[in-house]
Image 1: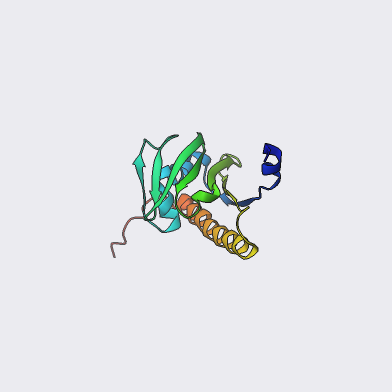
Image 2: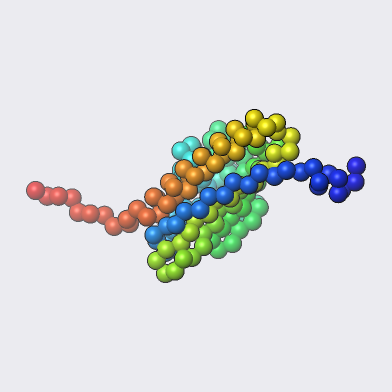
Length: 157
């Protein structure tokens, strides 16, 4: 089989969700940009298992999903799942912030995976599952980023 015929048969699904955040980009990145923190926004445990949070670092999400950071910029990181339910599907994700001005930014979470080998029902169910999960994660990130850093004094009455 030549390279062109292999490429002609590929079918990648793309899930992208954006949400505007009412905080400056630097403040937002400080609250959502730590590679080790993914689980906090997905409501599962996560931690860095190797590296320093930069390219080549590996995190574990949940009990057994391993993801390696394969790219980064000042306000983004991209990762690949190397062990877990989507690893065989070449699952990759990217979290990125874009400035909308001095007081706000746009958070975009994009996922891509190869659905070539999935039947129609599984394609639909995986797409829906992933879409809902990462829409929720993006919304949780927005809430975390917009949460006030200021502490209100306790009422002394």
